[in-house]
Image 1 (tube, rainbow, N blue to C red):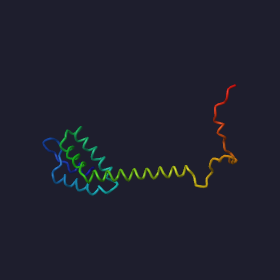
Image 2: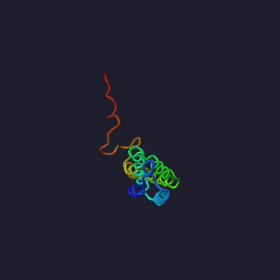
Image 3: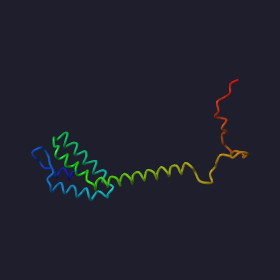
Length: 132
């Protein structure tokens, strides 16, 4: 984000990015498109665009930054990042359930006619008491 701030120039309608600087930012975003840091960079640029438009009265620079973020390499990189994050979350949840389920030889509920394991609670204990 500091690099982009340094590239901003004062124009007739507040700050703007020159064509050369716009190309430089686009090249850096393209480089980050395959990196896990892309999400942080996009977040920082969106915040910068908001500050430029709202607080600095520089809607042109804000629009330029948003256009750079809407480009296909950036959007595809964010999709991949989201899929990787989602996949990691699913794997972590599956591992938690696996830990909860126990191992294949772990205790199970007794079948009809079998003695219950020591320390088990009968289901009747949870039934509401009968009133006479």
